[in-house]
Image (cartoon, rainbow, N blue to C red):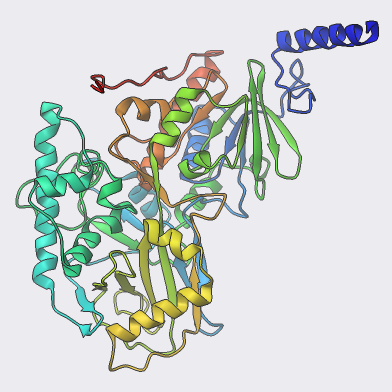
Length: 520
């Protein structure tokens, strides 16, 4: 009994000392940050080498802070700007399985999209795409003209955004975009109406109107009578321009951020193939444990993981993230956008850039694009089809062979007079299943309040910071959202470092409804 009491008192004394030193303790009781009174490995650990991480690093460098290390789980920098060499040996082409477009460039003396600026700086080859002026339409009987329905879907989207724009100044309550469509008079019933609506909406957001905020998907709205070029989402086209440029650079679209990184990073500042497993924080600093067991200490950590990674607990935070942060993370949603590439020995399909297929099941292999076109890679034999959301997650649960068989069956319906050959090559990226991403980009649902957005962006205490496209209020889901967040948070963190500490960004401890629910 005396021995047990002595052991307890000894454990309490040790625990008291460790608590006073504010060292994090792992579940097995081992003390981390044991170098708390000594030199850290670096001042700032940047977790993730995508656009937000690279631009944050560049911002620190420009502020005179070069004591940082970027930890990137993949073999190269770029994040969701992911390219792949695709095709048979004598006909290989670089295709973009991730981000593919510069969305919005610049109008006259207006501000320039920073991604457009990087593309020009590093001579990335881009080409205009004619999303609305070069579209063929099909159903399961073959070519089928529903261009009138397609044009009506453009008008329906304009009404959706116009009515939402009228609601914002009056601070009316948000709803789903599906409710917005209904209130603006659009209720698609036929498969042609649903396919056309999908082209306008799901193909942009990676999610359905039922899953998306009406107001956030529409601010600010397009002007009445504007010609639709692409859905006017997130201020992009009012702030920059309506031009959308597809990357056709055979170095890969990722070149723009990799080349930018080469301009200021040293070999010692980047660690590739470094998967973060745990992030320990305390008043003394941060310890990051990698999947191979290695530990790296720092004064600060900037987390640029995708929203999906944070939602799936693929990285463990010790102590756990506070309730306000976790609520914000799980209040936003992650869209999935999957491009499925096929290479054929010869071109048997449409002459337009795009095709829209109306299936009886909404979202079943609807949007087709050809790269075997005079505007892109003539003679490449490459065709790709895009699926999103639940359908993306569905095909990720299937084998490649099963997905390929489904697609060939759809092509057989679209082109009944053609002999569909076996593809020479086939590939799609499983974004949702990949623990490094868990989806393609963030989406703002109707229940995601501005306070949640602020909390998603806010730092946790002084040591742990966050940046990425998901934290951008204006441009969530876009590369330029990741860029501006990396720049803004990088500046704020630099000021904190130079000032010897700071409170950082404000957060709301408890997000409340404007009015309580009446449940009596």
